[in-house]
Image 1 (cartoon, rainbow, N blue to C red):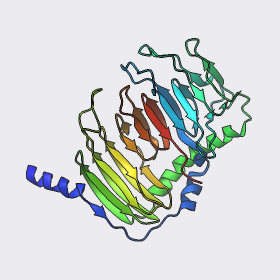
Image 2 (image 1 turned 30 degrees about the horizontal axis):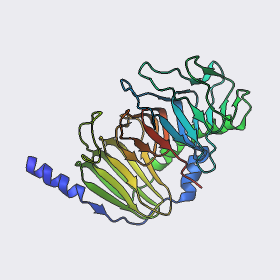
Image 3 (image 1 turned 120 degrees about the vertical axis):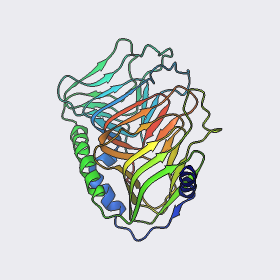
Image 4 (image 1 turned 180 degrees about the vertical axis):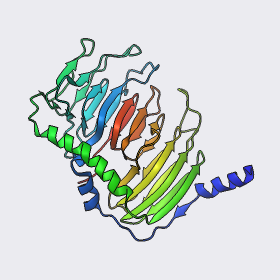
Length: 322
């Protein structure tokens, strides 16, 4: 049995799949995502950044960097930098009407380095307040608008609806390629080739990696790598992708966006230590980017989820449509 399983994993690790004709185009993908295309992160409940628990951060290059504007009903932000990405100016938008919409959180007890939050755009709420801890230095920002009348509020509210409907739409598309369960061994590369318009259904992907500690060197002990190659756009519908330490899910496909769509409810995708992932659409899941304070940063593209949490040395976001 062990020999059979080993041979199966070796075969999967060298797999290259050639697709058939496609069924989706860039215009439809962007239209379905709607208002969400103006943001790098959209959360339907909350967005939180902070410090990885139990980690004393190094003085340089630490913290969460978000590319593109952030949208959620409410946000709690510490040690974060929000930057512009294309036409998305790097705003922080909370749709909450009452109480606290955006909290610039105080330093954690493990925080020893005075790095404060920087927001390229404005902080905008639906009427809720912006709360700053006396322990947190003032955020750099283009301005604060709690009037509730800023058009960004309605755009953010619509984006939260759009990611849910888009996910359902993509999940219902007939597949052009179908996989069951893929177990990808550490230090192996698997390629799935897509053609423009492909819809790929995958049940479960285990991207295996080494046991992760603060001393893990992902260069010396790489995890598995799953590459999407060929020509986009394409939709990859999954029940679950379990990303192991030092593992990657990357896209080298040209010609259009690649959408990784987590179908329905299910386990929480957790990203940690040295990983590199394309963006994900998971509007019914909590997405936890649990970074560390060591030299292995995490790179994740756009995140459209139910609840999004990020901490440690993390680089995420980025808009996906022109």
